[in-house]
Length: 465
Image (tube, rainbow, N blue to C red):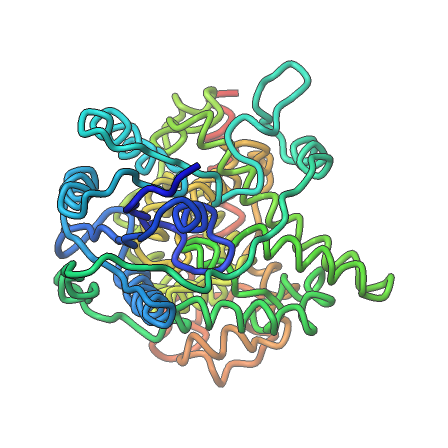
């Protein structure tokens, strides 16, 4: 097949040169490739993102541009409506085709559908590739052809399927001459400021994190992942969210590492691989049930009235609940854009089961704060904790923040780090209600009695059962 003269590669959630499906396809089929990122133009605040994630995005795009320049290209940035800007760029460059990797989220799919309607009118080919998931859309189904609603059978079916191999790194990319690049995105473009110290962005930093995780932590992940004060997680979630690493490479390297580990450590690696499958499970759930972004996945809970007072939300949001483990997690989130997974479960159950507030409040706040904010996983995790989602925790499973503290922060290291008012309070006192006296000067008493809150929540759920 003869090469086309010019093609566009539209970067979205694939900000890397290694094992990038659509980019590699464009490079094979065109004499020159225009790598473009279309920057959104919202300003001030956004329901689904915030300064942590936008700062990470800016850094990752800068890193991507540097990588492209090293192979004879550079990143083109346009601002505005993605469909309009892509079609303008195609006319400007004479591009015959636009390549991109499919987005699993409803918002991204809606843009793709618009592009699919308009591009043919201009004689432009579209090439949408599978890249963000190992198995997407309708690849993992029940024997009856339905989507899975429970994780374990989904995971078993997922593991039985053949896995694609990871590709290599792009070594050259001819770029059309005389094309304005535009300036790389900056936080000031959205009229926002840096809100804390985020993890290092860019493909190089992501690859360093993956290598470090495979050296040792993966063999301890099974137990260590539950302790927020320990450094036993992969810290790769934001890298998968922005495609600084391909899911194929992460899975492939983790599976290979698992085979090398001693028998006693091998289950830890498989536990991490299971988390990669959870990511795809939630993407599949959202693909087949996009309404889960607006309402409970389980229909029987859609008529339940959440009885909490939204005036309590700011105390949860700001880490001022009087429950040390909850406050530590919420402050870590605000200051770093990250929260440990065990802590995410604790604070989510506290908001929904102790304060009886709707999970959508917490879901939105997390998306505004998390550097690794992934719409499908975030929605799935919140509905799991609330008891309303796919394969959710039973409604009567209500975590006790005090016992969670005793089990997963027994020495108080996590709390002492993130709640400075409590740094001199012995760990034993952090794991039980303080009674009538505050744990420390300036620190609030617990805003609810957990035992009483639990009974209220059980009664709330019983109204629809």
